[in-house]
Image (cartoon, rainbow, N blue to C red; front, side):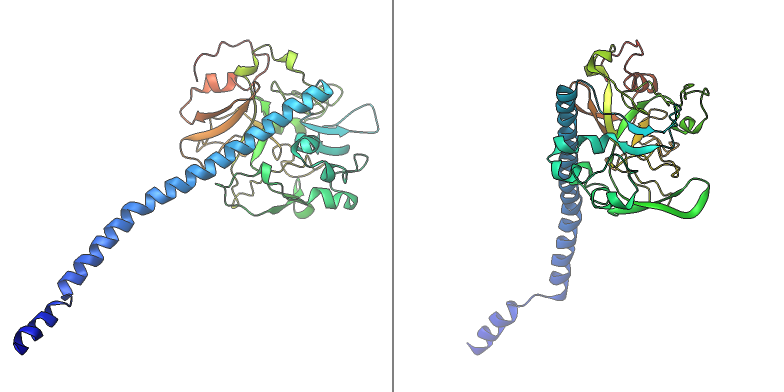
Amino acid sequence: MSFARSLARSRRAFTLIELLVVIAIIAVLVALLLPAVQQAREAARRTSCKNSLKQISLALHNYHDTHRVLPPGWIAVAPTATHMAHSGTSGAGWGTMLLPFLEQAALYDQFNPNLSIIDPANDKYRLVTIDTFQCPSDPKPERFQIEEEGSPGTVLAELPTANFVAVFGTGDLHGCENGPGVSPVSATGQCRGDGAFYHNSSTKFRDFTDGMSNTMLVGERLTNEPLGWYSTWVGMVPEGEEAFQRILGSMDHVPNDPTGHFDDFSSFHKGGAQFALGDGSIRFLSENIDKGVYQALGTIQGGELVGEF
């Protein structure tokens, strides 16, 4: 009997082979579950990103209902008759003008429109990171430093990061650095795009002859830290490096194009990026979208025929 009891006790333990088999099974299960968990988390982040874009879309409509016009892409008004796109006061962008419609009226009240956005008096307003302008899929710092154009190392200001930029159109934002009378800058110094937002723009919904449901207003942009590609909601920093691209986007390349530039639209979501259209809807546009259709969606008066996209 003692031998039988001893044998029974010995059978209660795992052998080394059995233990290895159990570990292998657990490892396989973890390997199978981890991608699913990551996909679920990304789906949640993407939904959060979409919801933020929806809030911005509604804020744009509320702004238009109040002022009968969309906010300007950015404000740059010089004391002379010539209003240069890259100088003047105050540099405030469309995101700043939306603050009262994004439950940020108290923050907007701290903004002094008579001073440049980088004036120390505007620090309390300028340095705030706003969740509505963030996409949680993008791992980025809360702030970045913008340097003077052509003078690396000369820091002009610190700005909060953001992931949503308004649509300038199909034109080249670098062209806004041109002098008066050189396209796309007019003789008076205004840099005008063929989209809804540009220098001192005052676009109304009635101007969307292409149709509100066929025109994009705002889209996503990812952060590329090694290249210094940071966007912001605040506005255009006078004489800042790539100052216009920080708040606006061009339709030069389709979303997530590997040959794209900083001023293009992009995201950390696989397969494309999300956009807010003029009718208030949010659409995910594939990175495989036809470029002609994509650019047609970026203009307000292009006269193009856009079908399904």
